[in-house]
Image (tube, rainbow, N blue to C red; front, side, top):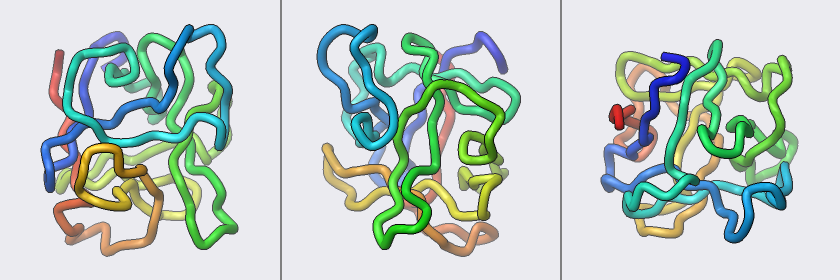
Length: 139
């Protein structure tokens, strides 16, 4: 799937994973400075993704989806430069769940409205609720 571009769509609301950064890609910061949200699909660079050895990578910036803030009550997804740490490795489940290799928590959303933050939280990965299910749509 490397080199193939996807949008990552939440099954509950049809909104897509979007990097929360405006401005030049070269000025994008990593970690909590660049969280992810769900937005309607427009095709902008922040909504185009690739898969690289279990890493979910933004095609334009080269940054990876990262399981951030594991020790907090509010774990979130954010963007970081690629490394081999488990915080950046994801398992794509047949039922639409995207699960962290770090701790088995999955990608979900804080709400179903556009602009809602993307979080990493525990849920039943064998029977995920619809807001914890994602669809990879080839572009």
